[in-house]
Length: 304
Image (cartoon, one colour):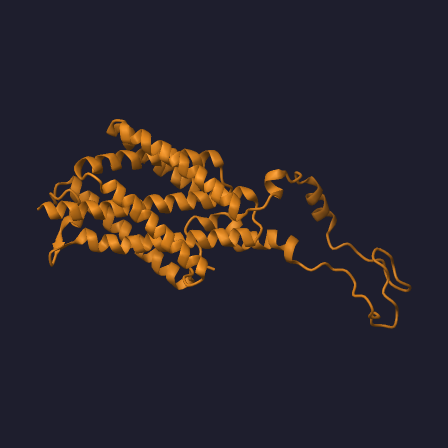
């Protein structure tokens, strides 16, 4: 099973969670077989009783294990409810709605607001990624602050190139729909080999982005997009890299869908639907911003 970075921090999507939650639903009960005599010539004793000539049956747990079990807090409704596709969709739509509210606010507020949104959203993304048990409040807070950033930068791009935001939105929805269709049809699946390639490519892209930012701030490159604005055989480098990154984001969606499927099939607690919703929001924002930047680079190069 291939895992998306961050998801394996949650027990709902790793092997430990499968062993913990899968045992109650999939393990066979240890009741005696009917109709077959027990070896040794003696009939099998009814459950809970001692057969003739046999030692009393011993419990499978030690006194310390039993004491630890009784000392644990009782399961609440959140722990007993199980993750489902319907509940994951509802939570994702709720987080997406908060993202839209933040985006509308960021579109109409000064740039300093959406810059703060970007910084706070980045911190909350790290917290949610490495938090083992999800917090609905933190997921929704991330959606709002990230929405401030998305709305602000979208408004800036739309001022420079009218209509570019609409194109980016439809492009994002198109990639999402095609990816979901391919996943549900079973034609595309996440594999360990592809995920390793994804991780290596992600690290390389992050290193390139960091170098590009440094070159832009130090004035080494005068292009508004840094190295991404450099043309190779008449094609902006940002377009070539951008298409590759969009494919990476599409594979990230496959990983999101795969983790949702894993959580539902393993009977993960309902609270972990928030982890799945958070993963989808992060990927969709990433995909949208990459498509928006590709369109901006194309529009900028066509003017020149």
